[in-house]
Length: 279
Image 1 (spheres, rainbow, N blue to C red):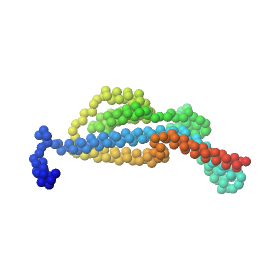
Image 2 (spheres, helix red, strand yellow):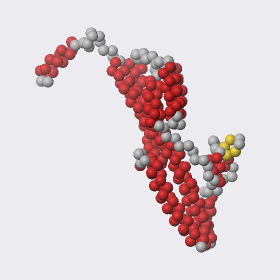
Image 3 (cartoon, one colour):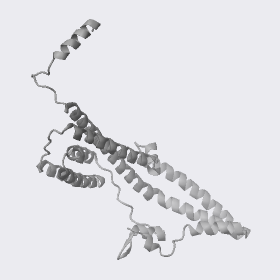
Image 4 (cartoon, one colour):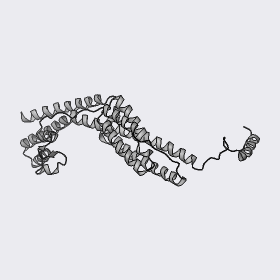
């Protein structure tokens, strides 16, 4: 386009009206921005929740496979320090040995601190196993199937609370999405299918045009929500389990096997050292 053509186009544009003869509403571009921000935020929330479930599952597997090995290492370290103290009769060696043993011995009144670890019938199996070093049935491994992932994403996009314009509708969606998240965390595709049917049979969201000031407020809320989710995602990624998971996102099981092999090698070294001290 030449400069003269641009000038002519600008002059013509001053007289131009939208196709159909109607004037563009002042809120139209704001509404488009809000819709785009809502969709982007929902996709971000889906990604964060999916990663949270993966971190939670990996943490469960990490404790199941590596927890006993770490516990055994700590026990061997304490016994090695005790054997050294018995040989040297050095007060400093005895102090280190006592401190190592104290870290392994339950403190008095521990049941008062076990919030959520016991009920009227006593300690839960996991707590008993930790205190007595007896085996317990490993926690159920949960990995949502591809169908469950697809259903979860579809439900999150349709029923997300961020799509609500009224408090009552937001409350309904929040309650529903809570159930969706719980079913996804359990990897229950059947329950997700039932929830999809329930949502399809429910009332449809009726959207009405919003004044410009409400749209600005909506954009501000969406921005704040994204900042919060960014913080949640960063905390997940920087956590010990999240950092481990990011090392091998395609094969986390092999990562655990590699770490377990390293721990077993350390156990063999500790056991040999203890045997030499006691020999």
